[in-house]
Image 1 (cartoon, rainbow, N blue to C red):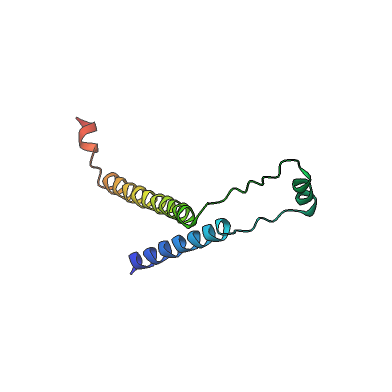
Image 2 (tube, one colour):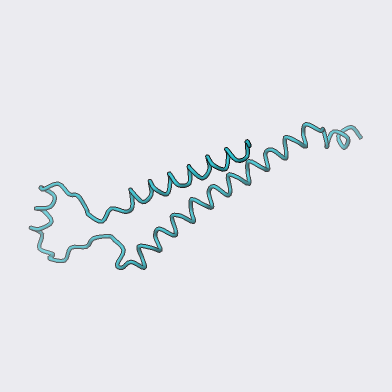
Length: 102
């Protein structure tokens, strides 16, 4: 029952971070103050460079990259937690105390 709650909590955290990433990186519009917008229009360089994905393929690639990054972070945290539990278990049974006494 306890493992089920932990896995549900982990799933909620992953979904929350994914939703947050979509909100932050999912905006297509660039909001600029009017003064800054006028300065851009008055510049002599008529080409306006907007840093954004060129097509849907690049946009999807960005989302996949962010998703894999979060998944890898959670997997590493999960592995570290199990390593810590295992080392605590070995310490509790005093596994290496026999070697130190010799």
